Image (tube, rainbow, N blue to C red):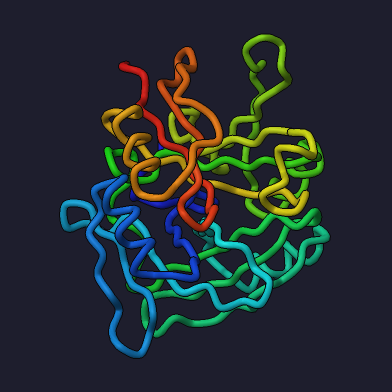
Amino acid sequence: MITTDFVHGSPCMLDVGVPDVPAAASFYGAVLGWDYEPMGEEIEGGMFRKDGKMVAGLGKLTEQGARPAWMIYYTVADADAATRAVEAGGGTVRVAPMDIEQWGRMAQYSDPLGGQFAVWQPGESKGVDLVDAPGSLCWTELYTSDAAGARRFYGDVFGWQFSDMPMPGEEGTYTLITPAGQPEERMHGGLLEVGEDALSLAGGRPYWHPVFAVPDCDAAVAQVNENGGTVQMGPVDAEGVGRMALCLDPFKADFVLLTPAEG
């Protein structure tokens, strides 16, 4: 369960970088019921809101050779200390710690195998305003070719607690992630070791994707298809989890739609 009283290592913010901001705003508005609020004329990007509450960011993709993708930010008390931990663990600093006016301090990284993620040191902004509700972030997930290595690296960087559960049909192990020192009900994500074919979106590198709660997964998937996106998997029912689908937006940024199981 993700909450907005963000603690160290919990997901607190996310944004998507795409080549066409207006088209992405239209797509996510149709699929998730988001309203888009531009930042202004000088910056090509802005914020998504759901019922007036900030749920995500949107920006123009400017990095040469970068693929359109969602970036997930995790809360830290000290972005500079997080950067040292990333480097000590064999990760790479993509964007060095920098202040975003009075709002906070951020940095972006790649893990040792190339999976991209970011941190946020809160200032006046602690992160998004709505989570774990329809039309908002409810889970984060890493696909990687090395689950044991990911556990070591992210455990050292964030102090995450891990627990394993078997996948249905003996299809491997799913590792659940909980922030340091928090009870299991504060679990916020998972990681899964997958084969090379499942990593083709990122050229064989690991990647994080967000899971968004929706009241009706099938209806949301229909909107994905009708608005230029594609569905890679689903909708399918996952026992004890809910009905879910792995989707791509029109630019192939990946995300999951989930109608959580009752109770």
